[in-house]
Each structure stands twice: as C-alpha cells, then as structure tokens.
Length: 247
Ligand code: PGA
Image (cartoon, rainbow, N blue to C red; front, side):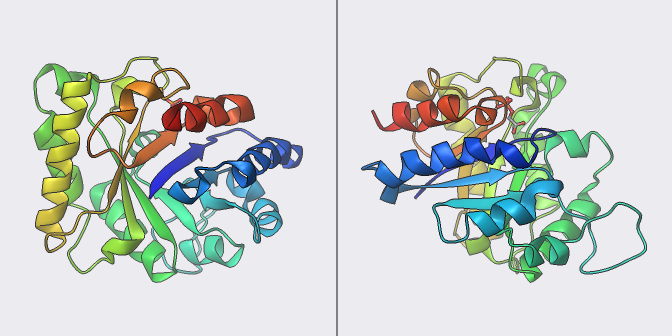
C-alpha cells in the first residue's frame, strides 16, 4: 500500500472542499486506486465538515497535530486526540518540523502519539534533520534519536506511519539525492525494526514533492509514499503526483 498525504498547513475554508472533490473523482476512476490511499490533513476548522462529507468516499481526513493530553483539560486553544477522533478524523500528523520548531519536545511527542493511538487515530510521525545536521553528517544520529526517544515497543506498529522530511527540503524545492534517500530510508526502517520486534511501519518521504520529481522517487526502494505540502493545495498538482508516480 502506498500513501499520498496532503498537508494543507494554514490553508483552506469550507469551499476549498472543491479541491478534494476533484481528487476524489480522479481517484474513483483511477485504475491504480487499489494500490494507494489518499489522506488530507486540513486545519482543525475543517476536519468535521470534510470528514462527514468524505465518510463513504475515498479520501481519508486527518489532523495536522493534536494536544498531548487524552480528552479534556483546561489548556486554552488545545485540541485533544479524543476531540479530533470524535469529529471523524482517522489520522493525525505528530512531530511536524513546524511544530517541533514551536516547542514540541520528545516527551510531548511521546504523549501525543500515545493518546492519538489510544483514541484510534493512526499516527503519521514526522522526523527529519536540519541543514546544519546534514552538513555535519549527523543525519543518522538525529533520526535515530527522534525515533527512539518517542516511539515505544508497545505502541501499535500497525497504526503508525513514519514520514521522513528533511527540514532543509520543506518548501525549498531542494530534494535529497537518490542514493542518500535510499540509505536513509533503509536506516530508518532498521531503527524501526529494532523498536518494533522486527516490524517496520510504512516510511514516507516529504519535502518539495511535485509532479516532476516524483518520477525519481518512484524507482526508490523503501519509500512507501509521500507527505506533500505546497502541491496538495491544488487538485491538479496533487493528482499529477499520483499520475506520474504510476505512469
Ligand atoms: P512541502 O511541505 O511539500 O511544501 O515541501 C512538506 C511538508 O511540510 O509536509
């Protein structure tokens, strides 16, 4: 199974559902549709409407983040995994670099993953090195730390997906070389297998994915899909990624 996840970030109003309608009609006619799943993570404000609308259709709705507590609490503006699940989301991102840079710590991320899983949300756990780590050849160490400090062996591996998103690649148009990405994915899966009794969750790539570079990723071993930011805000660009991947 491949995953194409569109992360809208701070984008979208109710009528932006048109974008999803177009993706949905492409998917329903696509001969490859059994091979992949489309997940969109709109902002909190749209989850309920979109999840209800697409309930019996082909698009899964997820959240971009969740708070590190289970149900209800007195944290202003926080939204818990329970609340997200109750309005119909089936997935949540955890640990996107945007949120890490705003203060998400490993212990917060661990609680987010724990309570998201407890509330039947599938977790897309994001990891990735910054430009300086890459320059200093620290990538493997950083990724290992990000994985082992948060993921625990008793977490349900079947409900976890890992997204490798090098921070230097997000929104910049820069992507890793094929060789680097193959080595990194192999390494990430090795670390994951050491956590989860020889089982690895799906590992996605994210960072400046578009309709033209996806053809390079297509031939890579070990990449189970993509987390797409910028290009997911246009139905045409997002559909082009899927089309070109299978072409
Ligand atoms: P991008 O974002 O595709 O715009 O680089 C990816 C992400 O932040 O998930």
